[in-house]
Length: 263
Image (cartoon, rainbow, N blue to C red; front, side, top):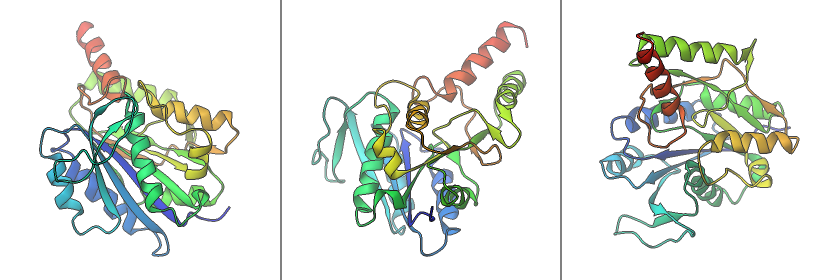
């Protein structure tokens, strides 16, 4: 297996004006560490934002070759272009979950990389409330070059969670870790070879757990998968997330359990 010829980063964002700058700066720095022969593109999927996230993304990517943003108006049964207000095409995504947003971003990135076969493109996913380390992209690419069709890294939390909830979350992480591997899947730290992504139908577009849904489909199809415990990103410890069924909901439940127990 040869190393990917291109890396495409997809980031869904909804009202993330407080976090998007740190996220994009970290992603850009990580991509700089790739060999110059690796082509890179970025797609930020702006999901029904009512704050300054779109303007910040525009400013942060103005001098970023390969960066683009898509504006989503809402969820529905179809996807259409040309509904914008002068700031570029807008979209209606064909699904109710974050998977529909990631799917839209993937298709935009692959369209811009259509001169390459999908097997030469590595799709990298993270979240707008997440920062990635400088070696994030290179670590994914190295695992892809070694034969992985999917790579699921782990996350560590920012400060701000109650001490009991933070300890309980760490216990859950440790319980799912076996040496240098783990048993978790996070959309904030996920890489997939594009041909494998397309072959299994991509992300489930409705409901929560789109990352687990894609991962399970890849495994069922027999693709080689890796879950290295040392490949970490740093994500928000907030308990009020932008999508139901995600990490924020788990942290809120842990926090509530601690309060109920007087901890």
